[in-house]
Amino acid sequence: MLSARSLFQEIVDNDDSFQLFCSIAASGEAQGGWENGRIAALVPAGMRHLAPKITRHGADEDKHGRIFNALLRKRGLPPVPVPLETDYTMLLERHGIGLAHDKLRREEPLTEEDILVYLSHSRVTEQRAADQMEMLVKNFGDHPEVGKAIHMISDDEDNHLAYCHEELLRLAHEGHGRTIQRVLRESALAEIAIYRDVSLAVMGHMGRLLKWPAPKAAVLAAGIRGMYAYERFSGWHRMVGLRMPERRDALGGAPTSAAGLA
Image (cartoon, rainbow, N blue to C red; front, side):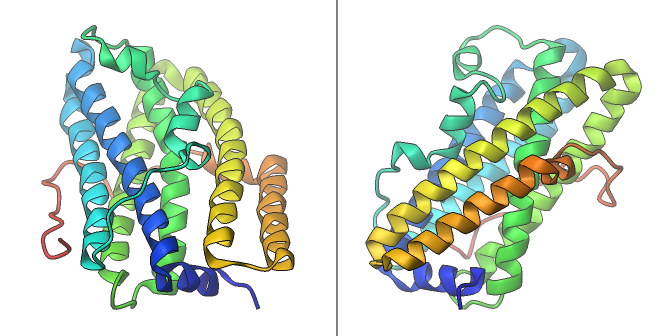
């Protein structure tokens, strides 16, 4: 029977698929770290109070990249190039979701609306990350090789999502609610399509590495498309709602360390 647990177990047990999985994850986290670092440096003067939290967000993403690379080193595996069709962050940018890298490479301060776009985009992508990590904790939180890393990353992703909720609600109360809801909806609808395409691409590569039979690959692809259909019909709404989180000021403290995983 196919399940998230059995599929991930296959990926973890095989060096080639584990190498690709960790390489894709490390690359995406490193990209997120760079983006947040640049945004923190370019925050407009009237929103400088957000800079330390954005910096913390970026530091967490960098840490996650180091964690995945550490998992590779423990097996004596080098990172491998990430296939373009599996590059989630690059594809989001190409579809105009979030802030363009060209803008982030300049030394010009961002605008208030840029920060609204950044936080709204992050609220959507952090929901995806938090959901994925919750699933991995449920199924692999006690795994001797990856369990500790999964718990650490999952806790960080919950913090990131709480931070996005809290800051967007504050900005909505300041009169930006209409812009926030528009960007949230645009980001969510684009993200679910990109996530479908990336999931199909990743499973295609895993299937070739693990030599999955055609019927198994077809069932997995159908499942991914079925999830997209659900999200397109109504599931995307969970990615745009805002509520005050239980974790307040989630990024206000010092970041945790990846020590012990290297």
